[in-house]
Amino acid sequence: MSNIAGKAYAMNVVTPSQPYRTWINRLIFMVARGIPSVLSGLLGLSLIHFARWVIIKRDQWPDLGQGKQVLQNDYMLFCSNFNGTWDQYIDAFSDGIPNGLNLFWYSATKYPQSIPITPFKNYITYNQVYTDYYYNATPGSAQRDIKCAMKVYDAITRLQNAHETQSAEEFAKTYKQEFLAVQNCLGDPGFGPVASLDTERADMNRLPYVHLQGFKLADQGDDHA
Amino acid sequence: MPDFDGGHLFLTFLTPIKTGSTTGADGTQMSYEQRLRMTLALLPTALQSPATQKIGENSPFARNRRTHLCRFMVLEDAIYNGRNPKNAIAMSVRGLDPINPGPVDRLNCGYLLFAADVDAVIEEGDALPKTLDGDGQTKARDAYARNLWSTMEAELRAVYGNCVGFDDVANADDFAAYLTKCQIETTMPFNDYWSEAPLTEPLPVKAMGIAAAVPAMIMLLGLFGVILGLEEPVVLGWLLPWQAHETFLWGLLVTALVVVGLYLYVLRRGQSPMPPGKYGDLPSVLKALYLQQNFADFVVDHQGSDAETLHRDFGAFLKSHRPDDKMQPSQAPGVISIHSDNAIIK
Image 1 (cartoon, rainbow over the protein chains, first blue to last red):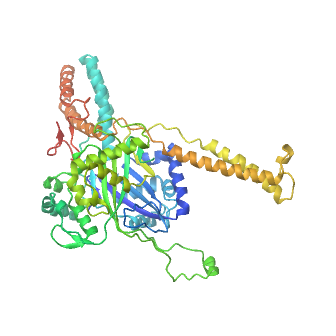
Image 2 (tube, rainbow over the protein chains, first blue to last red; image 1 turned 90 degrees about the vertical axis):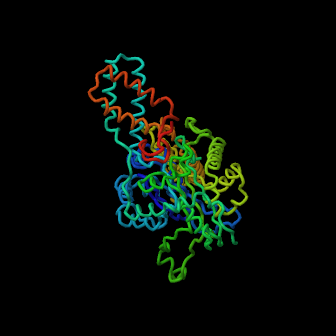
Image 3 (cartoon, rainbow over the protein chains, first blue to last red; image 1 turned 180 degrees about the vertical axis):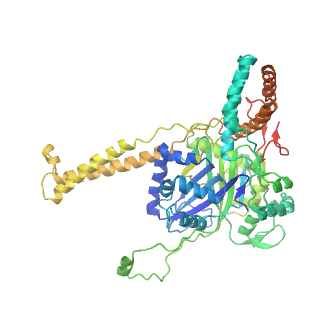
């Protein structure tokens, strides 16, 4: 079990909301998507690959025969894939878009507001559920690294066009211009910092079991009702 | 549906976990939830650290180039944040004693969350769509589910075998139908793989405010007229031959209709997707990382090169790394960099 995959951290936060208030939260999300200044606050953090907020109405919990859920509350599930440590992320959210956060958790029961930060961190801690399995297709690259790589891809495409049409001297000039524009985007991907020695050891200790598992799990033992 | 945004599907599935006990791989008696957690704990992750590189077994999700990020999470029960504070006077009037516990939500079983951020495509490498109607989203979601089944059936059986209703799943189509039953709509998706922030039409907030304020104002003028015992609405009566109570009632009705209309308009606007990024699909992301690393090496090797050499060698660079072909050569999914083992798709 780990919340960390390479340079990304998977956060899951589940918060209860009183059903008569969640429609307001849905409205706030939709308004946020239509107001660029609100969205630019999130974009400006530049540390989130993907994130989502999911309002689970109390009658929406899937019933595949185990019986319908009888609940007093709706729940909001927040899943984020971000770079940096847990503390850095919460700090960035709280410092960068404090009111945006308050709006996004508007209907959450006992939400303490994003400032001051200590009760806010406590709230996230008590409502966070750890990830049991986390996969990241680009573990060596943070979100900014990926966006940098996209800029380089663009520069190479432009250089490709220049290479077809320009003389060697003209191309050398274009090359220098493009290189100047993307020179800060040429960092190497690499390992994320190891969260702790325990994490490192846990990964090492998994080695024989992962190989053992190698998919004999499909023929697990008998089931008991 | 906001499951679709920026050319990606933000898939959220909640699957009920079986209650009762079962036998683990080692013959130990355990709950389904425990067996599920153990299975997930031993599922190979990406080759993302020195230790996992030593294990050498990449994640089963790295067998496709659609999944940017995904996670499984076991939710044992509903989250309870303690009793909601109540007004002490109201409690006293109603004769409620806070020492008696209030109702607490309990789920009748645990749930397995599977949340995946994937390209909304039918075939791997297709361009990300700008828009996708409900039917198109269903097709893309099912195509993803079938792709997972064809590439990691054993792992999916091991995971979902602990969940309610999975025993009848026999093939890829069944699995797609099974996931459909477990899907929850994502309310607010967010992704930032744009080279430049997307230009979106902002909500006409001022116009919306005026549209709601005008009938509300008329309603209030009518209400003041009623309160003051006038036959005509305040101010408005000088201009229009309306009765105060009529003005109030019609104003109230129109205000309510406008507010509901604006609410529905905002919801519909909010659900329209953002445009996809130019390189937002996973094959392009991996290709971009591949090119970036090779270009960095090229730059280092050609510091101080003359124009002829630069031109000639860049031609060789293009021939070798083929920027026009996003599928190959490229960086494989689930590895740190092109310098890792088996990290290049040729």
